[in-house]
Image (cartoon, rainbow, N blue to C red; front, side, top):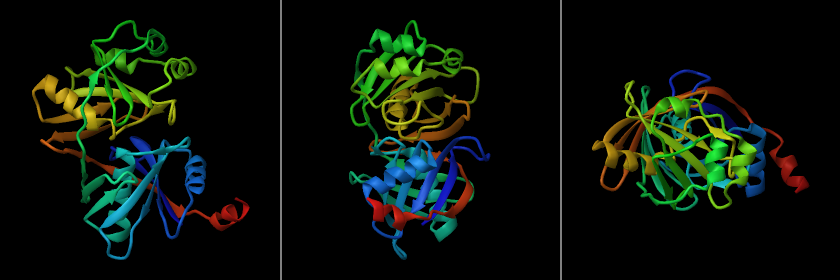
Length: 274
C-alpha cells in the first residue's frame, strides 16, 4: 500500500503538522488501520480510497489511540497526495460520518471547504487550568461536534510559554477530546494564535490543527468583526493557514510538503494473525 508522510500547513519540510496518508488498495479492518496509525505514530493518519477517475474519495482518520471523525491537516495532506500522485486538481473527500469536504489543489496551496460549528458557554475545572499553568482565562466555550473545550486568554506570549503537566491535564476532565487555548494577536501579521492539547484522544499536543478552525474561525470572526483571517499555531513545529468564513461553510487555505513516499508491507501477514 502506497504510504506518504506530508507536512501540512507549511511550505517548509519538517515544520507544520506531519500526517500519514495511505492509499488503500483493498479492504482494511479498523484494527489494521489503528495499528498502521500506531506504527507511523503521527497525530493522524488518513486512509483514502480513490477509484479510477473518481473525484469523490472516501477518507478516514486515525490517531494512534482511536478513529477521529474529522481532521484538517490530514485532509490537506491527502489532497496534496492526490494532486501529486493522481494529477487531480479538485476532489471531494467524504468522511466516515458522511461529511463532504471539497478540495482544490495547485502548486501553491490547497483550498478546503469545511462545515462551520458553533460554541456555547462552558466551565473549565480548576484542576484543568492548573495543569495548563493558567491562573485565569477570558472565556470558556465548548464545541459539541468535536467535544473540544476552548479557552481564550489575553496574550500570545503567555500562550507560547505554556508547559502543561499532561498527566494532570488528562486526569482533570473525563468528557472532552481536547482543549484549545487561543489568544488575539496584536504584534504580527496574524489575527489570532492557538495551541491544541489532546491527551484524551491523540498525542499531547497537535502541531497545527485544521479541524479546530471549524469553530475557532467563527469564534474569532464574531469578536474581531472579520470574515477572512490568518491563524498561527504556536507549537514547537508551528504552522499557519488562512480562513474565510462564509454563511454555511469555512474555507481553509494552506500549504503542504510531501517529505516521504514508500510502500507499507506485511498487511497480509497482519490479517492472518488476527
